[in-house]
Length: 443
Image 1 (cartoon, helix red, strand yellow):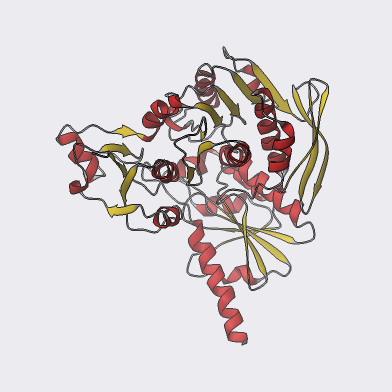
Image 2 (image 1 turned 120 degrees about the vertical axis):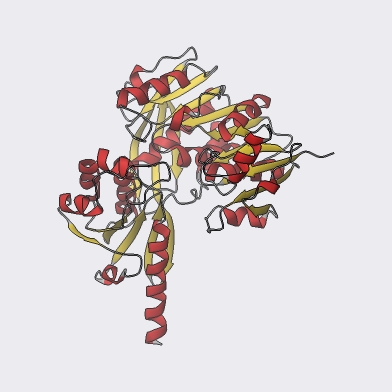
């Protein structure tokens, strides 16, 4: 009898990617979730994967059950039923830890840039050789015959501790997830523990002072812009079509590379991938060729044009990510006004990083703020409101509601950058409808 994989919370970005990957490897996959639309479900529907409403009847003892980390006995009937009847299940990261042992695995960890870097590595490597991968934007590819496996390695609640990949990139360390981590040192300790599990090569952004403290049994290779790194990106040319740069390895020139994405952070992400694939023995000419065709990942600087207006959708929900996204927008659209529409994600993060959020958003020409998107994990919302953030922003700023985004129309020759990890897309869709209605009214 064919084993059935049942995913509790299948619309989660990691969960949907894993479900797609197992489906493509020939396994029978189904899952359950809330009725609310989430951007990951499109791929599941296209693959013909059944999505059920949460119900205790979905749980069968002979299923291989994988449970999303947000779901517990007190908030999910399926978890409660499994616990009550002694039916075993694994959390996403527990399943992944055992699954990856069958491959040569490449992890991508870091406070920021994990998804984009995993996307670059997955794109390049899967074009060179048969590769399975999991990207945090809900994209997964599975191949029963693949030797290599690329995956995103998430630090939240130390979920990456079951992972023992041969190689890993760590993009940076930053204080985030204040609902779990107590301090920057706590974050560092988690990454340092993870680093000790890498077996063949660790690729670290060398200009991060926290990362310079990391120790590992595996050889450590540093990458960055400064000459003291092992892999150095230099001779940068940033244009409206992407970024061109050269890379050297310990004084040896590896040649010129081009990636059709924007922002200095994406040059670093690409340099990490170049370094990893060079050390693990892949042909750099093939790496160079496939970097040129990287089209990006979902919700990371995703662009569309509505009624002649450029709209960018991005997952940025931390000050460091906001700065990187706005830098990318300025690179691609140097002559346009950059308008940021931002939804703070979680009250704990907003309180902890209020000044940093204001400094980051001041990189835009105008700022619109949505109400704070709270997490189900947050019992106490604390004493913070989105107006507290607005008061600290020196650029033109206004709080808007999802029912009235018309103030956004007060700009000519602008690019609109919607950023957040909650439901910022509902504000984006409201703006798109507004723009479409303007067209129909004119006609």
